[in-house]
Length: 405
Image (tube, rainbow, N blue to C red; front, top):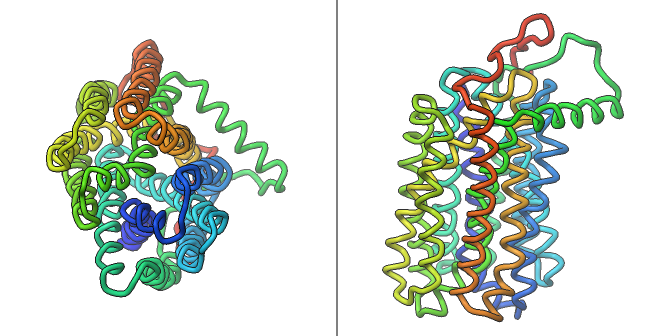
């Protein structure tokens, strides 16, 4: 499998993640309100939902390579727009473009890897999750360094150039496309078929559980994107420390994600997801009562490891609940549910933080995680999850087509 897919995933994630550590700089430079910060942080999640539901499914219909290449182009456009923005609506537009790009790329990449080696789906998904997180955590460090050297716009121009250079390689890589043996459908019939596929997947208990658990696991990310940098700055932390804290959150995730994927393959994704959520929920409550940045960063590393076990488990649960021709749609559905939860968290958290302080902000987000995780686990266990719930290969209905030009 081409290395360009992981490189593209890393670069897209870095272009989005570097905004995490720069929100307070943007707030001060452009006099942005808490509501504007919430929209800038949260709108990319909602854009990703639309992309995961409406664009990513085309990767199941012979267009995986094109979906990934166009996503890289969209990410470059988003970075350039962010560098040129000065008004809140312009930043929001840039984040919409970034969310659309990332939301389409990731499910397509996941589908390509799991279709190529379904028996090790968890391991591949864990590695992709680690690469994604590496981009998110290294991005803020890159952003902070470039801001210090050349100013607030420099990180966005640099990442835009990197993404532009990746468009050609991603557009010409060889992947195994999954296509139907039936004649091509028109636009309306294709859209209807995608909706029917999503409905068919969501009727399976294990797939529904995977989507709900994804929401529980990703929900804190929206809050962190919106208020983490501001919270630490209010406690006296520097921009450099904020960037380091994000790196140190992600490093345990990067290490744990491939391990979590292998454990999900071996012991079942529901068990590993349960372990992760039992760790994450109380830690989220505790954050709001801490006033020492170093202690916050230390506990965040523990949560990062727990999430590294949890996310690949939820993705593996979806992978074993779908078959060829459904994988990108299923991963997109799970990711969309998660992004929707994270987006709501990103919109609400800044207002809670401004009006009620960190204690109640972290508490109510933890309550949301608890409700979603309880529902997801109840649905999943009631479905009597097995390691493989649908046939990995289908015969006669689908064929694998070699990629290339």
